Image 1: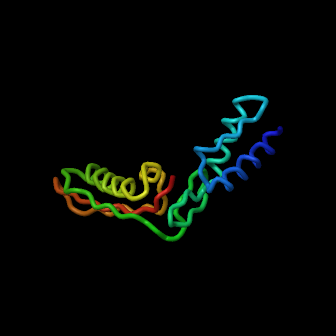
Image 2: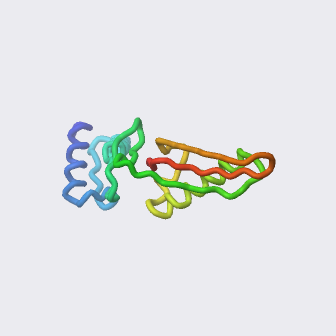
Image 3: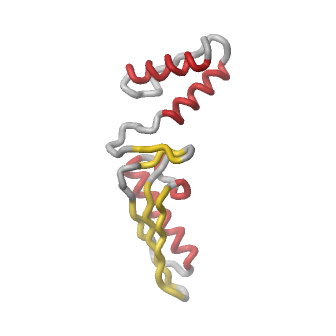
Length: 133
């Protein structure tokens, strides 16, 4: 069975199984390495995990495409850098709570907007971004 044929069978099986990747395994007869390639291809191809937001591919990422973004307000910190990290952590923790760990990485989010104010030893920042996985 060719790799592309195996991939088509796997995707068709996933569709029949209701979009779930874990209970369905179709292993090509010739080698386990092809199975890994197929699993990677399916992860890259499947961009809508069942959340209620539309997703679109942005490079290797799947990102919300319906204009939905999240907001995080950080604590007052002694430096601008620390305030920025605090805001990104606040964004991440809420996003993980709502959508799971795969969406909580602020560094791969898109449409990022960090706003900071303050000076001296009292800085606060807020961070807004569109989640990606």
